[in-house]
Amino acid sequence: MQIKIDQSKCIGCGTCSALCPACFELGSDGKATAKQPAETGDAGCAREAADSCPAQCIVIE
Image (cartoon, rainbow, N blue to C red; front, side, top):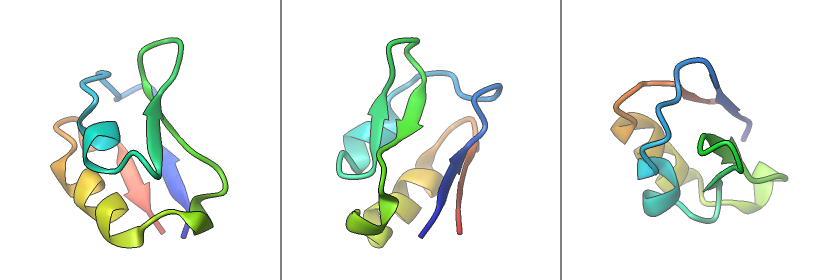
């Protein structure tokens, strides 16, 4: 699983890190970052976080 976040679209709402803290966190700039390696994270919650993102800036591959 690979997680990509378009930082230019991220609004820093924290939905992704609230839904899937194993894969996402908010960086020092207040925007979402993917925890690495993403392979250790839960693909189900990562996809839920991507689907719930109001800015639609997360892509799971």
